[in-house]
Image (cartoon, rainbow, N blue to C red):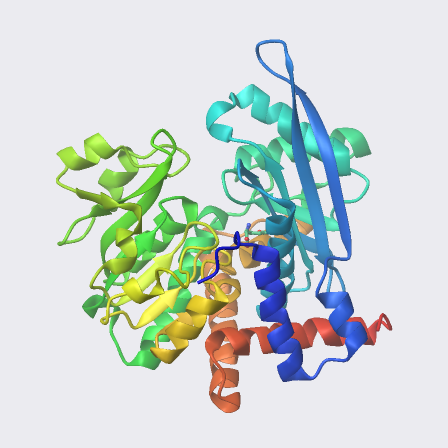
Length: 428
Ligand code: GLU
């Protein structure tokens, strides 16, 4: 057990180094891919509603754009760090390559706590972020999207600011826009549904039926809620969800043996995905400590909150019944914990495959925005399903052929594609 603070970028580099070795990449390619190509760090002075100013830190980090414009979300989080954004930008490169969409990897963030910001303050923050990077992002350079604690409204403010600066309509600048304002039907559901498309495929490999399975979910934000929605539709039962409580500054788990009622829980959940504990208790939920989700006697675990949730310290608490882990979050499992999961033969669908539905749908949104013609929801979701399922099958075939874990197989496919693009362009 290490007492060093967790550093997601070191973790991303550790994962990359392992795959660089498997692929036998040359030194120049390793040097290019193990760090982001470009980073923008800036201060954002914002006039607050009380008339005073407050200065926030913002970032946009472009890891690699050999396969197409950078792509990746913007997070609002009080604990955001440069190294978190670096790691997330790198994971975006692998994610886009893994599902084979013509995009690179980027990520952005603002260190802030949206819980304590009014909507007008958040609007000013969004506009200031765009002003800071307006010349370095755009439809053919780098395309942002929602992520933790940002949504379609934030995207529209950002688009509006970008269009003011550049004097034109550029719907391809950003994805995750509101439907009717250039957004795609299905984009809100896409990440969570995509997680379940991969769960469905994994269950086929494990010879299990969704209807015979139970799951515990970490998180109750956008990804978790839609993953639960589709998982329940295919017959699964969710017996535990956990979420962060901003007031208490800790997470809690909500347990219901005969299965949670998604619609009822949504009604008592705020826009940040925090469930009201008192109302949940009134509805008969047992409230347990935040980490209880990990210890449930279930078949499937779905970490769908933040990075660093299954670690060397807690991996041993995972119940013997668990056969499948689908990583809805980015970077939820540390390499130390991953090693234990492999030893225990727990089938793990790695983050940049399991949660690739969001960016895949963003790509479909870009296509629709660029041709200014929008598809029905069914058409979007069935395209998404085909793309996610093909990616899953490719990773699973590689895992079997090369006797690799699903994570290493996904990495092998993604890194090889990006390395090849860099080579073909004559960069290395
Ligand atoms: N923020 C999402 C992710 O981590 C979506 C990114 C996008 O749509 O560009 O994959």
